[in-house]
Amino acid sequence: MQTYPLESIVLEDAMKLQFKAVDCITKEFQGHEFLNRGDLGVVKGLNKPVTTYKAEKAVAAIFDAEACVFVRGAGSAAIRFGLHTMLKAGEKILVHQAPVYSTTATSFDMLGLVPVEADFNDLEKVKQVLRTEPDIKAALVQYTRQKIDDRYEMQEIVETIKAERDIPILTDDNYAAMKVKKIGVQCGADLSCFSSFKLLGPEGIGIVAGRKKYINQLISESYSGGMQTQGHEALDVLHGLVYAPVALAIQAKVNEECVRRLQDGEIPEVKNAFLANAQSKVLLVEFREEIADDVLKEAEKLGAAPNPVGAESKYELVPMFYRVSGTFRKADPTMEKRMIRINPMRSGADTIIDMIKKSVERVKVCL
Figure 1 (tube, one colour):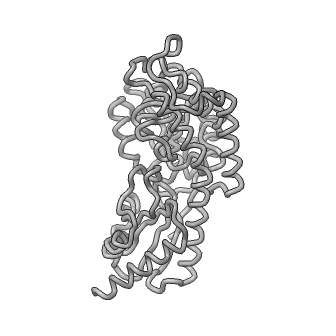
Figure 2 (figure 1 turned 45 degrees about the vertical axis):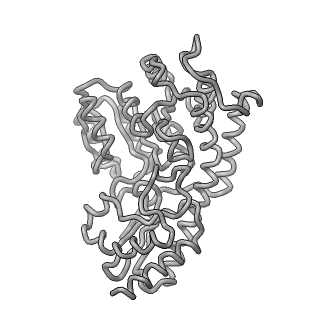
Figure 3 (figure 1 turned 120 degrees about the horizontal axis):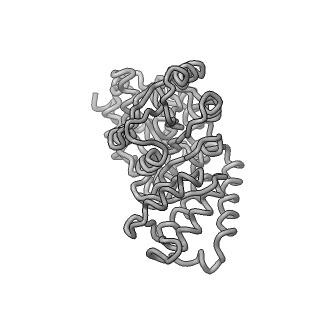
């Protein structure tokens, strides 16, 4: 199997991103303002808490964007709101020729959008589709992989679309933000959308960063008091963003060490190991026998999480041992019986290897 995982930033770059995040915060907040839980309500002149307004400005600066707004509904709603600002019902949107993430597909249905597919792995095909479909009004690019063989680069695909047609581009940066060197808006896209929950932040808060004209439209439409992100939630977004880069860089190092050790034959029952973005960057472990289900059951008894919470949320500390994604199962249905995916979360490689080894030993005793 050949996979093309996204290139994670190294620890030194993650430290620089952490320092940049704190620097951006200090430019918006006085010390006493940050050392509290923020204000509440629709403040006159802003229609949102002052704390939220300042936090949004800080996040925009972290990602080199013109503006930012926090929305309710996590990453899925961020994408939904972003698409709404770019398109009207019945208009066409360019998407990758691959399974669309389920909540994004729902957004297309809700907004009445018509997806037009092009293989983003082939830039010439992208150009061809844009030429033959002149009524395409916008594009959506998912940063992480939708298929096993996806290998397109965000910078290249954004530049290709923009050079061929100057249409707005929205990028789904979930599972990529603060793991990669540049998110979508930093590559030239118009909006980047992702969840704060996947970056050690609060539940339910999505982030939309990018061009002011789209952000301002969202702000003007989201005037209801109940739609505002309250001050304490906005501070929690910043708390998560500061700690996420280093934590995720360490996680990437653990993944790489696990792959190396498993490929070196540390556990004979393991046939192979890969890194893949499905959706988050995970370790895929292929066994020589069809023991995946039993290994997952035993791993939970040994302390592994059996399912995600927010896919790298603040609650997820222990490693997650989980079945392979639906995309991978569609590509090869037999994978479900002989392959599992592992996200180290905050654990080390020794813990991961030990859990696999002990789980396999317990399964073998029962066979």
